[in-house]
Image (cartoon, rainbow, N blue to C red; front, top):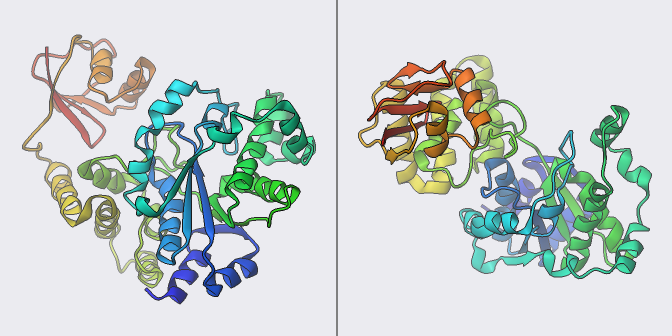
Length: 392
């Protein structure tokens, strides 16, 4: 694509809001090499497609020759961002955060040329701040700035607790911009307040305030915003067959949105697909298969996408079991314990919930009893994609 087309994609695709569009467009057309900041808190081990929307945007910036700064929030992940939360996010310990971030750069490398990316960790400066320095930065903001945010206001109106720690998070993210000296920050639309904090602090430290691109938040597999907390994610680490199957499971109403925000298909083609779906000229089942192929191809190549399609059609369209079913040895026959041991559920409550939602099968029979004793060599299925054979 030409630079003009790339710049148009940067300024229009997946954009929810922005600051200084004219300034940004002028900079992009000037040929100046810009520093583009994207921060991500490793609150879970996986980067999901919702977080990959900024990565796709960074790939466009990288194609235009700009410097990408990939900020891993190893300090801020411990503090917890409540920008999109209806309740207080618990603090994480450093060991959990360090475990989570182990493969973050590898995952980002599925979309970016990491040899040209500047990777930084915000603990390098946030760990060292003194109370005096924190007080100086805090003086830039008012309490009202924070509590007037809709989700915080709702919590306070309902008598909920809002910790002082939560109020400090936007300041920390803003200080990251001061340290990086970036020209542009990109992030999800829920990061708007935090990214504006970066502008305020950069001005305070006599830096040119960053331009901002706030990107569209996209629903996950259950129709809510894609979030690791809700388990409705399609992860960059998902195997090709699982990724393909998860895309096929989303509601038909999301097909157009997924094409727009999760693929690099030209927008002219995306608009044609949306029009065809609305008119009935295109069948959702066929278009969704094309969508699953396009998304899987980005992360697993043509061969991986084809493998995903063949597996899905064999197992779910033709209702055949896969040729190779992983075999897992378990220590308990109880279905709840089995679901945890094979890795289908994270906890007993999670396993019971899956059973109550009729999402678990043993030898192709729906499980309704939490106390079920699973027989030897049983085939265990959770949802449409997770399947194993167990032994003891």
